[in-house]
Length: 102
Ligand SMILES: [Zn+2]
Image 1 (cartoon, helix red, strand yellow):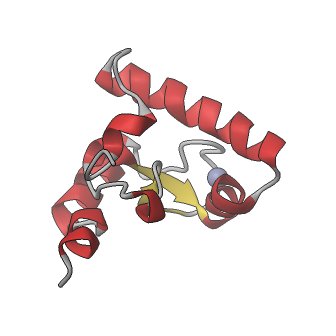
Image 2 (tube, protein in one colour):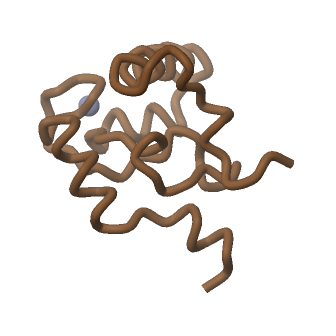
Image 3 (cartoon, protein in one colour):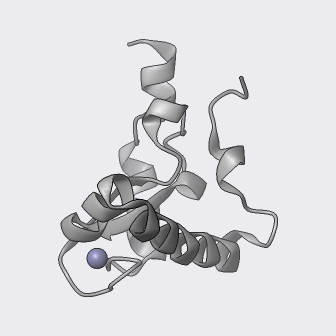
């Protein structure tokens, strides 16, 4: 496997940990059936498959998070950022989740 592919894929133990941290619920709407498989910093940007970069989202929120309007994406990103800061402290930031800083 390519190194970047490996760095950005999500190992099962990370999924298990994220699922537990998020209580098996979508972080944004906490309502629909969800999966612990959303990269906050996308794989295309080198976002790593680590618990500080992975959240549980339902399909609907995942779609909007990745492909919604700019306004929707900013709103969702704000919710997710606040959520991650609660768990990992105020120093958490999306840019730090990259496999490599280019
Ligand atoms: Zn949702």
